Image (tube, rainbow, N blue to C red; front, top):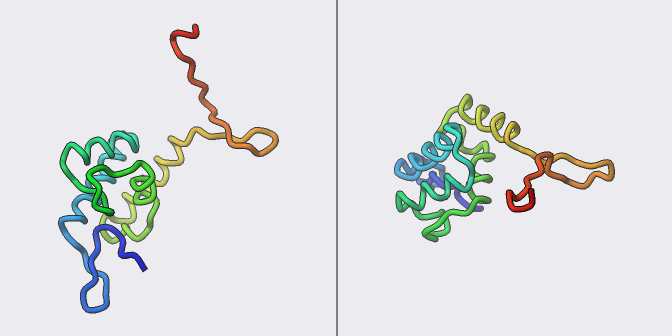
Length: 114
């Protein structure tokens, strides 16, 4: 079993690692303030916060998984967790065509193509 970021194991039970819990709160706050997953990655890199695996940069996938993980409710609170889940759903721009294949609802065109 892998210990979630922001927690440590003490006497066989999970306990908060306050310095990493502050990073978790920061990630949720950045996202709710309007930062994209990529922007959150950049902000953590600028602050010198290493990823859970020890790399100097987080990945967008790691941020996305962290934001979706209910194990962070004790750190950030239920209301903030739910606000992020609604925000993630609001920002999601993939729809499905008739065959069920995922397809972005917003089509972007290069200005050079116009």
